[in-house]
Amino acid sequence: MKKKISLAVFLGVIGLSLLLLFLNSELLNIYNLPQSLPITYSDVEKINEDNIFGSNISANIEEKTVNVGGEKFSIKTLVFRLFGLIPIKTVEANLIDEQEVYLGGCPIGLSIDVDGLIVLGNNSVLTENGAVDTLQNSKLKRGDIILSINDKKVSTIEDLEEILNSDSFDGKELKLCVLRNKEMLDLSLKPVLDKEDGEYKLGLWVKNDAAGVGTLTYVEADTLDFGALGHPITDYETGAFVPAKSGKVYPCNVVGLEKGEKGSPGEIKGVFMQGKSQKGTIEKNTEFGVFGNITDKSKIIDLNKTAEVASRLTMKPGKATLISSISGVSEEYEIEIIKANYQPSSSDKSFVFRVTDKRLLNLTGGIIQGMSGSPIMQNGKVVGAVTHVFVSDPTKGYGVYIDWMLAA
Image (tube, rainbow, N blue to C red; front, side, top):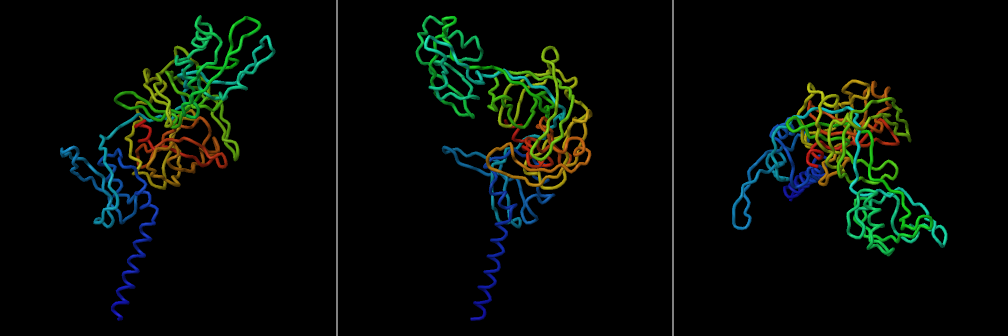
């Protein structure tokens, strides 16, 4: 009887220990990993050397044979094992070569030609029956981006005028395809006849471009393709996500800094001149930043500053550095990674960090607007980029993993 009780107690202790282990945050992070990951062999070595997921968990690249449609295929998998024996998570390993990039950190000017027309507001039209506000009878809102009218693509004011002034247009309600918060909507709007010039008007203020200042994150050494910002460019006046048709990159001069304070994020005050000073082209604006190609390396790329990139799996809470040219020269500032999320779905708020470097705190108060895109290094490799500041505490910020940016 005593032996049975002792065995039950022993098994209970083992079960409780395993339960506590499985509730461990590192283990939960493993279960939150996506089913496929870009990774290098050196990343795997780093995971094991630094015990990223705890001393009881190891990771190894293994080969697995799968049967698809009667044919056998061999795939590489990343297998996490408990005590080196018990498999607890297997993901497909997208093995990539070691990649070296030129480090960013410098402010740049970004000018985007919008793939559509941004609605800034409304303007009453004077008709025979008095002033008419066309938006009153429409679901169209400020910040919406008109992509097409009556199935015809529009991206300039001239496109809009051509539709309204065409011989086939008879003043009937127009069918609009609109982008709102990355969602496509079918709306309608009825133009009215302007009493003054006898032409149909939509009664809208619109524009087809956007511009701003951000920070360059990296430039790929072999192709000169770049990534910047870590989050999308949005229209300054409406806050709307801006789909890019094309765009240009310019060098930017910092003319002032507004320090961040609680409730006020501060900002970099920069100026850039559009025209012949163009340094590159913008190809896309995504949730992870602005991407394109550098065509002129001068005043944009420091050829002496390069680093390899690392997988999100190698990041762990602790010391890291942030690279920025906000002082006028490129410098590394000390930060602390507070929390790293190995989320299964992509996010521009992948991890949380705190600025600890007194030089940067004295200069800016922490993270300020315009620093988005500043590269973040850990163990000598680029692991991410700054994306957002905590408005309630400018010493803290969010970052995005570098592999989310490289895969965008």
